[in-house]
Image 1 (cartoon, helix red, strand yellow):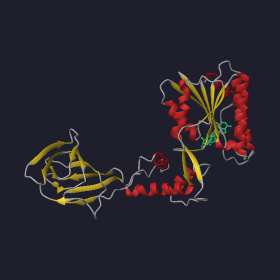
Image 2: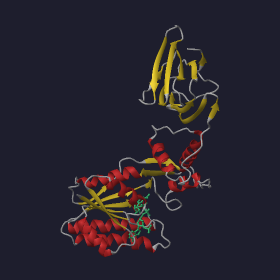
Image 3: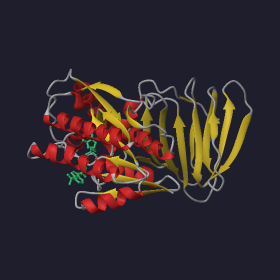
Length: 371
Ligand SMILES: NC(=O)c1ccc[n+]([C@@H]2O[C@H](COP(=O)([O-])OP(=O)(O)OC[C@H]3O[C@@H](n4cnc5c(N)ncnc54)[C@H](OP(=O)(O)O)[C@@H]3O)[C@@H](O)[C@H]2O)c1
């Protein structure tokens, strides 16, 4: 059993790390939060293999708190660890600002120095991460994270203030931090002293680009378009953005087209992978009887009974594929075959469709022709 002590366990990074480490078989987490005593810290430390020292203040009411907490609590931790025979690895969440001359940066630098002195005198092991801005779910908006603030405000229809759209910032994604930090529990850290380490993947973005991407993601909820998932940053940003949805606004209505055949609604659209849509069809109704030159599709009957029929546009032979919601199958619709799907059951039929193109009414690539 590996034990991780997490200080600041109720903060943004603390919560994510608690969940991440909590999933590792054979690992347990001892959280340390603001209301806990110094005695509890010492007690917990004695059981820990790794201490993730995340407790800190980023935006205190009074600058003296920087020194009191960021340096002061680190000193308490170092002293308590020095008194132990079996010293845990200390992973410290420092900041790139440790190199800057500001009260936050100076307090982080001071904390690093306290840990270096402890490691030197007491054969301790310390891994220091000078993190850039971390983004991801559960980060507090309107506090110290521009991503959290922009996400929250855009999703809630509030203004965002982009001070300098050309200013570039460096960001690191919370899941990457958690994966990197959790790796220390594997016991691979045979080093002594202090190591400065980095989370391998970071992103650089201007504030203007960040705001544009988040506005685009907001619009995508209505347009049904999903972002380009080959863009790793956009993928992380999309997940982060959606984490700020209010609990009562996860669901959005679809534009459902209803006629005497049944209903049809588009679900997901993508410039890269086309679109997904769903239909319900009444018994006896036949949909389709058209072909495409280049558009290809996949049909999957989710409920009901159907026959999908094909005929090559240049010959008369009809191919029939009976399909049923009782045993899911995916049927490819090749180009140049006129095709139809008939509800042959006594009940409503539900079909899930994928097409490799988003439907364009000006260029539908769909030609009517009876099978
Ligand atoms: N997020 C980033 O972009 C970033 C970048 C570089 C470095 N860091 C550092 O990484 C650490 C975690 O950041 P975060 O974004 O998760 O910050 P956070 O959300 O503010 O979490 C920090 C946690 O520490 C707690 N805390 C403060 N003083 C404490 C004390 N004396 N004893 C016990 N707990 C205390 C806070 O409690 P309260 O809520 O009661 O104050 C809070 O729960 C911080 O040290 C931060 O400086 C963060």
